[in-house]
Image (cartoon, rainbow, N blue to C red; front, side):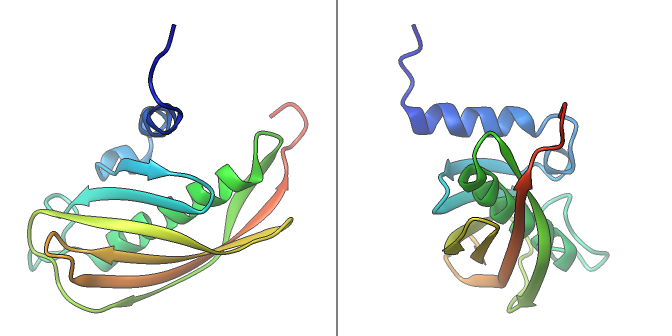
Length: 143
């Protein structure tokens, strides 16, 4: 019998789904997940640009990952969520440690889900702010 809390099972399942994906390559680790809020962290090391700073594209990958997972959880098992729009503003550099992305639902509709994403360093300072909107649609037959 599985005695793990439902949240623990969801997070473990999401981390297992990372196998073989960009999320695994970037070492994204889910910490919390629900349709309303998704939290994940990612190391700065290995995700830098040539100056040793966190790559802005890495921040966007983290933002899209947490927002898309929130939208997928909102969509449910019979539908999928695909990214439609994302933007990012980079506020400060991160040089080491981990950054944490937190996606908070702005709107959870029948066909669209939008999230505000904040990415912070280990001192709680905002590194990046992003907004992602995902399209929710039925799964393709046989998918």
